[in-house]
Length: 216
Image (cartoon, rainbow, N blue to C red; front, side, top):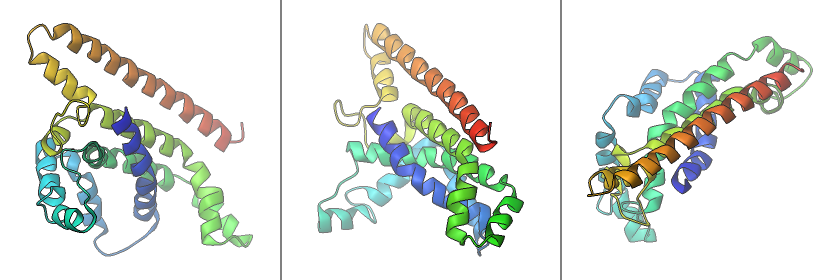
């Protein structure tokens, strides 16, 4: 829960910025940026975890500098688990926000500009409120994906009890131990319950946001 919640809190603002740029801006290499963002969805999670280890590991390209200059270590730390979950869930947060912004009626934005609103005010008072359903869906999908992340996490931060062991890695551990079936089943039920609750909350929040956006 700690990893999943932190992943959403860190990732959602970034996803909002990236999705807004992809939906409303034109710039060179836009297709490449879009492809790189969605790359974790198509490559094996272990590959993503290994790349994170090469970049952010204690001897990695960026990790070595962070360790030497600031004594910051992500590999085999719970903060590294947050990063792994964030990377894997980020595409699922960006896409619904982008689609939601793209579906905002441009005539409403044009009307606000005609009335003298600045681009920032148009975005904050028109675009963003109308994109709330997509933002809610992005938060729920990001949380659910982070909660179930396994491959990249175990590759980058391992399975250290009390530090980097997540729900998925705990289930895997119990499956590998004698007489661990009961514990694995209990955690599976917990996982299913949390996921189902997340979907129900997502549906409710989306309907409420759509009702508010349409003035109901």
